[in-house]
Image 1 (spheres, rainbow, N blue to C red):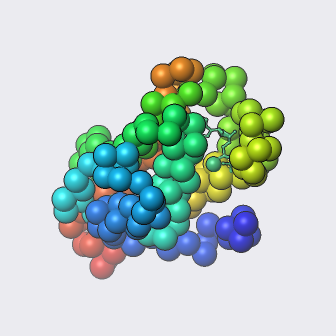
Image 2 (cartoon, rainbow, N blue to C red):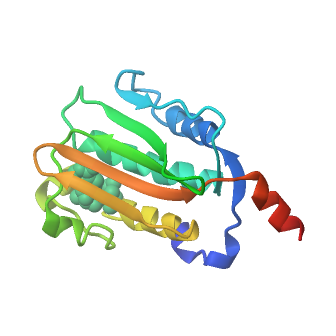
Length: 171
Ligand SMILES: Nc1ncnc2c1ncn2[C@@H]1O[C@H](COP(=O)(O)OP(=O)(O)O)[C@@H](O)[C@H]1O
Ligand SMILES: [Mg+2]
């Protein structure tokens, strides 16, 4: 839980190829096939990020997606350029979903939806607390869209790198 000791000032963001982040995430799930864990092709999309932290965030979301789903279900990692400035990365599962009243608390430390089940699976309830903190380091937040019984989408909106950014940083 070393991350909880970091302050905003200690995290620098760099222009990073989104595809490189997706590769880090893919390498964390070598036990999953390409039809279980599906990535949209990121091509040459470049975002502002701290690559290891952002990869950890997505890994946590993907892990939650698999943990909430039946054995052979898929988890998808996709992205959308909402405009010329931002890009949303989305992790989608078709698992058990999260109720509206649980979503309100889901980023709280040690919060677990199914207390008895979580005890067996050994979850700490800290995964999404860390994800929320990593999102904050990227000046953004997590967005949850979920329907119990149907699945969950978790999105994070990040700034796209553009040539203008370079000009700005030279001024
Ligand atoms: N995609 C999801 N679908 C259903 N439940 C989820 C999802 N993501 C998180 N949860 C639930 O929210 C709670 C908090 O998640 P998290 O902070 O990741 O806990 P942990 O660190 O124990 O994995 C857990 O009970 C988890 O099962
Ligand atoms: Mg988790």
